[in-house]
Amino acid sequence: GGGGGGGGGGALSLASTDDITDAGTAEKKGVALLKFVGEATTITDPVPLPSQASDDGKSLAAFFSIDSHRDLLMRGTGNTVEPMEANKELMERWITEAKRVGAVRPDEGDPLLQVTTSGIQFPGLKILSVATIGAKLIVDDDSGYPVHEFTLVKDTIKAEGPRPIRFIFNKLTATRDEEAKEQTTHSLTRTTAKPADSDDQMMIVFISSSYLEVDVSFPKVLLRILPVSKEKAEEQGSQSILKTIEKDSGPALESFKDAYLKYMR
Image (cartoon, rainbow, N blue to C red; front, side, top):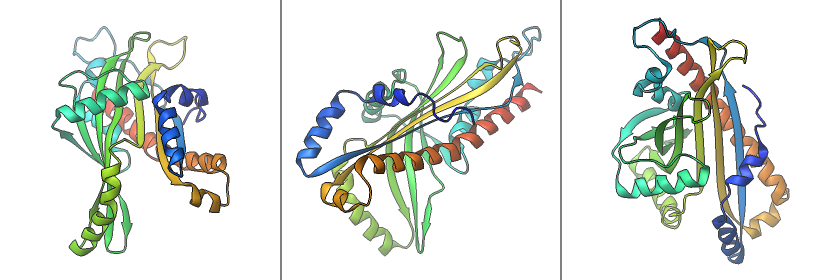
């Protein structure tokens, strides 16, 4: 993967002014707001651009516009990806989240995907994360290359296992969901292509940049017990978020590249 650091400053510019009021109200309730942020960029090896001369209709734009290719980017290392019915609430959420993370505003008809992670296995219980992701295909104004923008619209947790255990799990997490009308996880992944180097315009690389932010309301009482400062906790949490991004984005981009090479044959 390329420069993992990728503009730490970018994270700050994404935090909109409403955050400050959120933090303010949270602080009053004896709750500290912890913010974990990870950003990573992944780049593939160079691949050839479709030749302009051939009239087989194969182009980079055509490759990007095929749904099964797009879905590879969300599949990662074992997620399932399914199309979802859009509704007014989800579209409104998408518009809000897109604005927050700096993505292009969705139009009616832009597809929503349901992405289910392979999950965490406990004895007798499997916990899956189910994310609703807005997928928008745009053309970058500056580069002229197609871009897939994936914005996290909503995420929920689902349990699989024996009914009594599931029931207890849902009971324990239900109150939290009621309060969590506010989205606590914000994420944007942009995948595009660019010339492999400035001299050779016939070779391109695929490049994916991911931004993931998790806001946790943490009881101040617990914060005092923690062996680390709030800053240190945020730093460590952010490191683990970075690992999460890198685990999926490398393999996902690699399979996108492999599909491209197959498409070009």
